[in-house]
Length: 377
Image 1 (tube, one colour):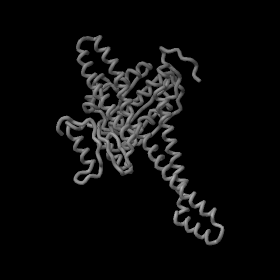
Image 2 (cartoon, rainbow, N blue to C red):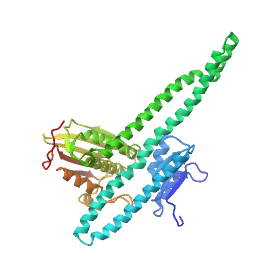
Image 3 (spheres, helix red, strand yellow):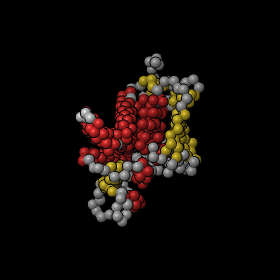
Image 4 (cartoon, rainbow, N blue to C red):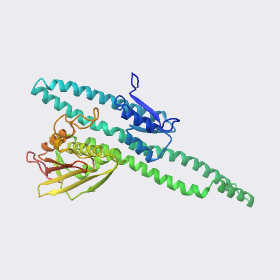
């Protein structure tokens, strides 16, 4: 691709000589173009095509008919994400140079980059959350337009029956009912309303999860339900998982844990996203909880992904170490996880076998020794 390279590509799927999937595959295979975000623009609405597109690396889908506000919003989101990635990359390079100047520069760089990793994690799932919201909003809008047409037909039919004062008029009204497919309208109206209610419920759950995730504890120590934090985080990252991961929950009964809920939610997010990225094709993520004696709990997140090579296992918690391609990770996700777990007085262990998967197990005290919590509710 000649310079200057585009920041974003809007790509149709159905094209005469080469379909959009093949174009994206070739873009992804070329080191010079693989980091260009691609948004598919298509009239197709089946999940198999969306799954194939996301597996090939598509950033988003825009469904026809085109709505200007939706297109501009999706483009702006991808351009903002690219700008954030570029800024993060430049920040990483600049701070890496500062590290060599001494221990003080290293400490400062780590703190700045830890914050950058938090923002990168949020940015990673932002497009997915937008997609999860836009899907039900799109079909609710389509349903409302269809219902509007049905209502006009029913009003026309009601007017015809109201004017039917003899047998001939009633016969004409009955013929109109048949031409409008009245029995189908009765059935479909109920189905459209039920589907729209389900869509609104989905949006409500996502918005509530976002509110809980972003405001959980506001950085304050408090008693928290870890299962609620896990469910909230699963809702946030669901778009990263749903196309190729089956999520299995194995929750035991747990007591409230005195913690920083927002930080533990960040831990859960990093581990779940890493698990999803480790799975090539279809796989399973298992989230399990258990009591450990009377004073501790354990949260385990397992995947059936490619696993971690033994020679890399000792380095995965090192700052700046990553096995992801350039531009896909800062190498601070697991370093951040370890630091948060240690801050809670806990421990993190990893068990991995190449080709079979990985399990991260977090053991947390119910009440960290260094804290003085109020009584659990």
